[in-house]
Image (tube, rainbow, N blue to C red; front, top):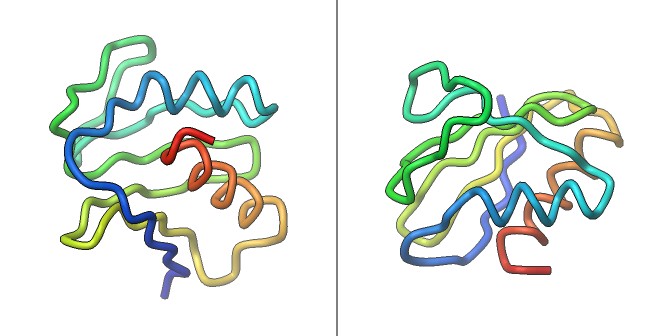
Length: 96
């Protein structure tokens, strides 16, 4: 069971600027998977992605497009550091 946070964004969401904002905020992330496929480091992510898995220093966060936005999902037993990374990704998705 996961803990899900919905970020109400619509339309294409390029991940490169999101990753840049996260790195600048002290939460460097790496894209590990896009739409169920392993993703090579440094390869650009298409804007039309449906699901992305990000590796944070605290663990994995899944981003999944939903009709009402993007769901950020972590395991139900996620610790405080992973929940903080989830919150940082939420802020980065809306440009903050």
